[in-house]
Amino acid sequence: MVEKLKQELAKRPDLLAIYKIIPHDAKVLDLGCGDGIFLRLLKQEKNAKCLGLELDQESIIECIDNGVPVIHSDLNEGLKFVNNNSFDFVVLSETLQAVHRPDLLINEMLRVGKQGLISFINFGYLPSRIQLLLSGTMPETKTLPNPWYNTPNIHLATIIDFRNLCHMLGVKIVQEIPLGRGDHSFAKAMPNLFASCCVFVIAKR
Amino acid sequence: MKSPEFSSGIKIAMDSKIKDKNLVKPQDFLFGETEEDALPLDCGRKLRSVNIRYETYGKLDSDGSNAILILHALSGNAHVTGYYSDDDRKPGWWHEMVGPGRPIDTDKYFVVCSNVIGGCSGSTGPRSLNMETGKLYNMDFPVITIADMVRAQFHLMRHLKIEKWLSIVGGSMGGMQALEWATAYPDHVHSVIAIATTARLSPQGIAFDWVGREAIMTDTNWQNGEYYEKAPENGLATARMLAHITYLSDESMSRKFGRGLQETDEYSFDFTRNFAVESYLQYQGARFVERFDANSYLYITRAMDYFDISERAGGNLSAAFAEVKSSFLVVSFSSDWLFPSAQSREIVRALVNNNIEVSFCEIESSYGHDAFLLEIDTLGKMLSDFLRNRHQEWKHGRET
Image (spheres, each protein chain N blue to C red):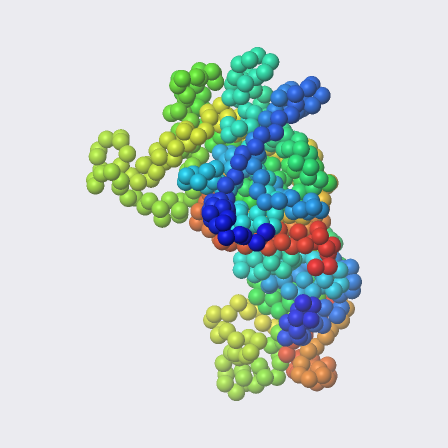
């Protein structure tokens, strides 16, 4: 079972990176937790105390099937029902670009958790830039497959954009994990150009 | 099972028929015969000679890990599933949800359901005989609360030799009892499934209850509760019709009836029934008075009015849940305006604040409050998965 879960995870290098960061027995809140597979793995392998938030009813049903506690909620309404500092880690994986106000959500994450683990698709990634440059139209890629007029991804950003936002919000960037092709060596050298995705570990200053 | 012999073919056929029909027999448990054993009530009085009508389904495991208590709503009873006889055409009130191979699977779980005290379906209520006076209680029956109902159920639990419920499941008023169980008896409740319910009845709920009771108490047949030949049927039917509207939604009524006419093809220009929705309500009212008692209706609605689980903590809901040890599944329905989702979210917030494991889903449904009886597919999957995980957790610890 666990192996199967890990295989699932292998399709998402950002989640794998986040998985590695989270220590045993941590309290983890996953924003937009999907079917709960990730939390299930954390629970089983690392004895994490988990909670997921999810908007989609079908995904919630799957979370309950997976034995992961989940609360039906809309991230755009903040995390009002969660107390200050009640989690060790708050995870937001490939969801930041879909919320109405990423800045407000980041503040909320660091209100309820000690550290935020955020992964997002880097719009500064070279193939995206080339598409925009050559075709003159908004890029449609494997990770961003929707046309511009009908996409949940309403706040696309580059790695530099995100760093700037953190600076503006007074948020400390603890770690950056750029993820690209192969061994990520290009991505590490020039993240904004060669990382298709990046994980940020953030904390309050 | 023993291998069937040729000659017992008929018996096997009968057995399978009984299994198909899930025949069930209601049982009675009497307690409180002595002053010490009497049931103490929130109002300060004590109830003597308390009968609990209950039904059980399935078998209790040797390790006692599979007992589920189902709690009924305002007009429910102990008969949650199955039939009383082969000719019985009407199954229990949650038949599609509970039974062999169904979401609350009686092949796996030992399911108990009892009629609340104050009710009129076998448990002691206002139409029971008061042993001290030799007459029916009627309005002499003490005003009971949700906590009193649960205290009586605790006696039943002891009687059934159950130490801890795998889960306590209830919708609407049943959900109130489930919350009460988790706070009053934290060591005896492994998990709670609270459906379409609230931690405190809203002023809107209290208002509807008031009008329903007024309809009964202003019926001349009510006679201060001392009715014998003629029950206050008009009052009770009106109360039911009013309540029934609150169980539906604008959308479900539009879908079901529209502005359709029934019995006539055109308006009759008088005040008899014209619209399908009118006929429906009248039918619901008429059916209700055949099976429900007016005094019970007064007592049970009052118990709901008085329900506020935060009261014990000075109105602070989070503080009220401080001792809770159960994990929770909370479910609401998008079109329920009697127990709207916001009231379920209030429960969820208070549980999260106490670090209690909780899942919550607002199921998309147009059925209104009644959805908890109708959304069997979606709700059923959640319930069966939640119960399976809780059961595994109990039996094997967290590593499943």
